[in-house]
Length: 282
Image 1 (cartoon, rainbow, N blue to C red):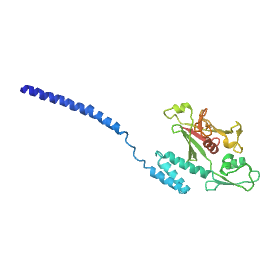
Image 2 (cartoon, helix red, strand yellow):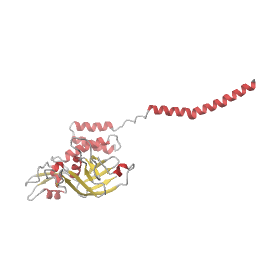
Image 3 (cartoon, helix red, strand yellow):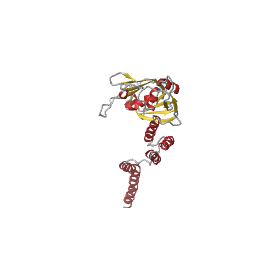
Image 4 (cartoon, rainbow, N blue to C red):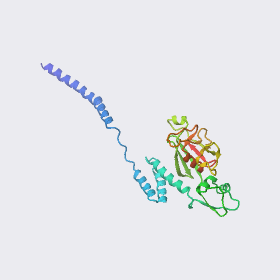
């Protein structure tokens, strides 16, 4: 009887210990894992940059454009990994574009007084600008200039950085961020790439515009507002093209090659970039 009790006690200890270790090593962790999955992922910690962006946008909304521009530039510099970086860039790009193309003088812009024999191309050469940029920045309706006319020429030292992973083209004027644009069509190899490729540096080779009738046009032509644009760059297969968008629809016809942009975006890019400006693809 005593032996039987001892054997029973030993069996209880052995099997009980084994059951304890099985529970600790396998059952409890598995249960904990299932409970964790049931709870779902932990919410990300709040982004501390969000209140700062709200302050920047409040300045813009209240009409303090200069203050908003300064604040947004500081935000982009201090919070490059913010979850709201695109919103900040979009807001700053809108301000920059409006101020840049305004005929209102400011300290960064040249004032050119038209002299005898001046035409837009000559003014552009003298101011290191382009005829189309001067035309747009001064809200000109034609190409004729008059002696004594004051032209505002904004500073133009642009370069482009294309990020294939984020599908964005960022323009910089000098070393300062100017505006970003969305890429809406890319070469199949870039779409399929899971990792960024090597950085490639090139330059603008040429710019052209073709109206709906297939006629090559310039900024001075009547059909220019409906034209499709092309900015040819020296990096093969990555020139910029207008992507056609059917009237009244949202579907887009992919560009046959290169990087596709909405018409209005590429028109602005083509105005800002000039021949030999740097283009980097990363």
